[in-house]
Structures are given as C-alpha cells and as structure tokens.
Image 1 (tube, rainbow, N blue to C red):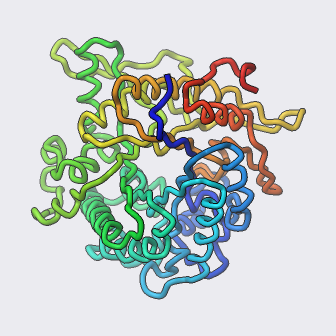
Image 2 (image 1 turned 180 degrees about the vertical axis):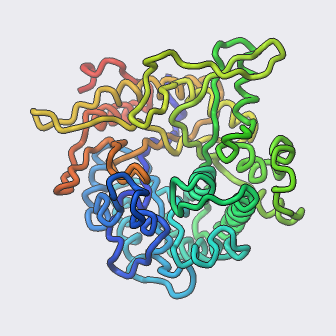
Length: 459
C-alpha cells in the first residue's frame, strides 16, 4: 500500500544551518552568531558564517531538490536578514534573496513551505529581553506581516515556530543552545508564554494578509514514548508518558507547548508541577494562543519505550547494551513514526505532517568517489514503513520532510554530524548526492508504495 494520493514528499533545512553569508548584504547578527562567537559553546569553534553557502548556491540546491523528485521544500526565513534590528527598517537585499529562492523553487515545480522561526532571534531583540519581553509577540507579528505580504502570492504553506521546547529549553534553561542562558524556571515559563502568544499573533496575521489561501501549522517536539508491547495496558502507559511532564526534564514535553495552542488550556499536570512559577494569564491570552490551525507539524527522530506496571503507570524500559543509536546517540526506534503521529492526532485532532525525520550518521567519500550511506537507507526504510503503517491504520498523514537535504551546521555540534541526503565537502562546497538520495528518489516516485530494504534492488 502507498500513502494518500496528495501526499507531499519533501526535504527540509533551516536558514542559519545552510545559508552562510552572515555578514553581507545587510544581514544583522542573530543570537546564534553570538553563540558561535562565544568560546567553548560550539564544537571546535565552528560558526555559521559560511555554512553550506546556500545564499550563493541556492540554484544548485534547488536543482538537486528537483532532481530528487521532491514536491516540497521546507526552509526557514532568517529574521535578521530581513530586519537587521529585528524591527524597524527592512533590508531589501534580504527580501530579494528569498524572492530568488521562491521563484527558483516554483520554476522547478517545488512547493515552498516556510518556517518563520527556526531559532535565530535577532541579536538586537535579545538585547531588549528577547522572549522575556512582553512586546515579543508584537515583534513577531510585525515580522510575520512583512514576510506574508511579500511572499504569500507564491507561498501557501506556513509554520510559525519550530521546536519551542528546544529554543526555550536548551537556549534559556540549560544554556547549551543560543542564547546560552540558564534562567530560573519562572523566567523560562514566562518566555514560553510570550512565544506561544507570538505563535497566535502570527497565525492571525497570516490569515489576515495572505494573498493565497494559507495552510498553517507549527512544528513542536516533545518526549515521545512507544509501548513495549501491543497490549492495551502498555499502549495507554506510552500515551500517558508521551503527554506527561518529567519534573527533571520539564522543558522537553509536548503538552505544555501544544495544549494551549491546540486545546486552549495549559495542561493540569504542568500547572500542578510548576505551581507559582506559572505566569499569570488571561482568557484573552488563551484565546490568542488557540488559533485555528490546518496542520500539526511533527519532528520525530527517536522515542523512549515504556511498559505498564501493576497500577498501569508507565515504567521506562532500558535498552540493552550495544543497542543501535545514531551519531547523536539517539536510540533508533522506527515505531516512533507509528505511535507518534497516532498519539498526537488522537489528542489534537489535526492532520499530521512529518516536518523532520532523519539520521545523524558517519559519512565520508569512499574511494570510488561516492558516499555509501547504507545505514541511512536502512534507518529510513524502517521508519517510513512504520509511517506507512500509521497511514494505513487511519492516521491522517499529509506529508514527510526528510531532514535534511544537505549536511549542514548542526547547532552546538557544528559540522561534526551529517544529516544530509547530500554530502557537503566543506573545503570547497562540493555537493555529492549520497546513495540515500537516489534511494529516497525511488520512494518518492512510488509514493511510498515501494520502501525497499534491499539497497541493491534500487541502486
């Protein structure tokens, strides 16, 4: 069986991870520029100054996406490339760059899917408090308005925020991502409240100003869990664990970020856990966050495994020694692409798009000049088979975006990890499609009815 008829097969990237050109054509600095320039924060002092140089090589990248056969390209906009100070005077050169990119995608028959915020807050706004500033929702609304007015004649698909659990949790609580803060829980929850308000304002602005009928979603990530067995007890335990909030890893969850946006309320489990640290809010705040959405973007790479104890409570199941992991040391759990979409659609009742899924691997150019990433092919074969199972079992899955089209700047890991379907030689910016690129092309061509496990049958 294959996926639904109008399923979108795509690839994904993010502005700071691929564009480079950080100091030219009027772009202002972002918090990730500042973080990279802080000694000890990024692996071996790597920066996004050049990244994949896609700012200059966008046509080459569009051609490679087209040759892959992808129907959609999810990419993000660099806020500080459009507004060097975050607000105020626009930078026409930045808008012109995205005009060229969008036009090139359209000419190649590739649908643009824009993410408005993929972590790169303008430095000028951070200096004014960033997401802690109560004005931040309006900053984001003004930025959204400018983007939509300029590009919505050619763009229909929009995501507001990418992974708030990461840019707020790792960036403001743990300090391992930009801006590198380690703030009290009360402050992080306030910043989260403002970010969710910003999401709501952004949705309002898109619907008000879009020149073509918009499809709007957002792309959270959380602590997904899968059941140890197919028993009803283990399935319910996995569902409960997925929407719970761990007192230790409290920033990494679904419900605190998704329930206000999709259900119009903060989850009771979080209100009890956070107590007086929860920011004061009004009914109007919840109404603003809870704007109608068309899609639920889901970023899934891995998941924990739980079983039910005698009381039905979830108990983590430890992996045995030597259990397969990616180079990021994320456990390989293909069933996450079955249970994740299923649990999330049951709770939030929206069509699902897999906005990110992929493998951090150890790739290099072999002696024959090719990149034989058979481990990525095996990984994707397993995961996509589970996603197809979810679709065939009635989960409304509308699309899949492979992370990523190119090896790129992997945030605090710099260039140490490779997620791409295309290998990047960072010494000369040469792009080399990996074996997985050609494999994925065959999957797209068959609309997922063929997901081969045997590499030799495709290549």
